[in-house]
Image 1 (spheres, rainbow, N blue to C red):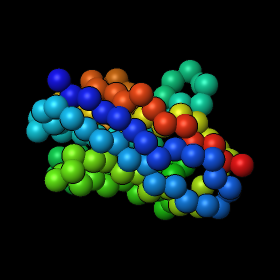
Image 2: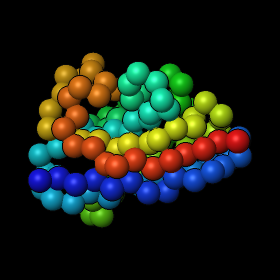
Image 3: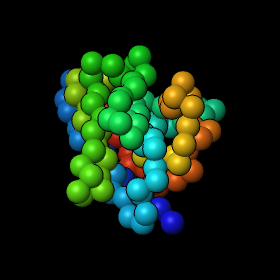
Length: 124
């Protein structure tokens, strides 16, 4: 069983930066995709950034050039570096992991089996 725990959420001024972390425990060796999602009260969580087993990234248009997803395998930790944040970035941020996915669906929530509890980011 895989468990994910996010941290690093905070209140930050527009234009500032944050670094979110997602620490994983359990057997993560079979996870092919990991990603970051945001929920701000809308109908569904929005995929922001994903990383596959080969290290290939995918980003939502809304965060391209501003956010960077990365991981440290030795620490079983996933990161989201958020730069030049905007008020639209406000929301609850979740990390997630999937056993397998169709590449084109990486930014959708459907295929992700494991989710963290979320960490709040507020941009003023």
